[in-house]
Image: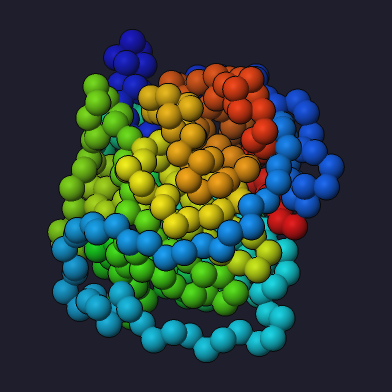
Length: 363
């Protein structure tokens, strides 16, 4: 048992159970009136004022071998036809699925980011036993979110807690799997065809309905003694079932999303490159906080460079326990410190604390 607790400190993004989420220091003050943003579930602290600058395109070079048949013709597709007038101009609703998983919809267009619902216990992961996506759970969560046919599935990097279920969601919904070359190899191993996937690189943009998405080259925080585990690229189709350590991270992306009703960023890991947010302007950041070295070192560049006024912490839950169990935070995430630091040292920032399955809506 002592060995398992020690190993928790360096398994991907820290996920061993520590304490029930409701016992962590949660924010107690509601958001300031007139912020125009409503959480559904969870709680908030602070106040927010939305920044006005428009997002500008940026580019950060990353590498990763392109799978056979998945080349530039998929990475740079013809732009889709413009949506009908008024389509997708409504409120944007974002549902948290646990870990870094989000379901995003404006009522006209929908997509998932890093959906992961087939959770396995820590002993199985450490023993390198094979893992596979659970189709019943994928179907259950697709139904819970109300995701329609054709919903796209985006993967920000290819560790198992981001990519294991992504091909199954794409297959279930008949949508495209979108991600790095490593992610495409995960899709090929799961049985997806080339025309069901799209490879992207840092700096590229993609339009989905009224959403404009941009991929920023990012990084993964160290999990053990300053070392990033399971780095490198997946270089051949990765068939399931297979062990977690075979899910190499591949290229790491932070996803910037613009919509007439909202501007937000999905950053799954507590890591940032110098000047990574240059040319970016967002209102809200969904931020992975596990294994962070310093709360202020993590959030200050986001606040100053991207102009964010609201932070939604995620990937801080124990993803080695089933989603059917009450949510618990992962060992080492120190959620209390995150909230306390922002409340006392960055009180102008709104922190929205979601629970798994709850949603945030703007406006």
